[in-house]
Image (cartoon, rainbow, N blue to C red):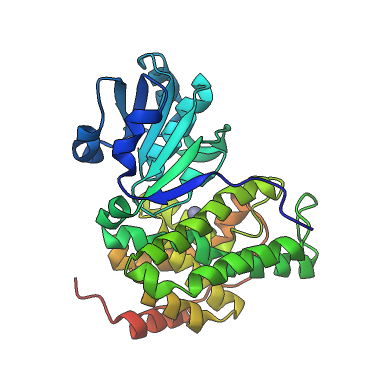
Length: 348
Ligand SMILES: [Zn+2]
């Protein structure tokens, strides 16, 4: 078998933002965040049709705003996941060429076809956008906060738990008819996971090699949902379900990779799946998975874990270790002890 779906054209380099006004279709619309615009507006010229500052991801808000956008002949997404997602949404609705410029390594939004929008706070992935190119500027990414950049490993480390879950479901006869276990896709996912595990120190230091490694992994990961036939089995499992349960319970905003990495570690403990090794990798790359580092408490995490099986069931999510593992107080204590033995106890 070979991989037949495409991955987005991705360009690495320097001084890439000042080049944009020279070649993008004019006039151009920029989609970014308020805090980033001040930093980058100096690079754009009189052909700027306007700038759309993201303030909501709700479908109804976005649809309303579409009517008030200035006339433009292309869309430039500039920023993190939210800006890139909204840029996709606008490009999809207006059928405009899209150029994507991730300013950090947090998520794979630049590389996926669908856009994450909220319907009354519930995330759904809809639409279709293939950018002309994704531009990754080393200097720009290196200027983003290191913790944000490092957190990007969450959406790759989760393959570790997702692959176990898919196989487990297969062994239990619980895979979904549309997503039967496929060792070929599992092997691709494992290859990408290993490429990142081999470079945790480079990613920690946000070196050029670290940036290339993690962003190439995101490039594969963003496209593979589509390329595997809209199948997320080899890239997402209990790892994200822990995060969803925690988010449902606390309604707090998170840096995606933190609770996902917590889910990767806790999930691998449930699975008996090289938990110590993955915890050390998460620590070494510099993602803090202590609840306090995410503005929640151990109590919240304990509750989210105890409600995990229920959450997964009512949300209609797929079969993973979460559906069969009984979370006890002892288990929660063990997870806490092991995390604190690596990170130390939280000092505030
Ligand atoms: Zn994710």
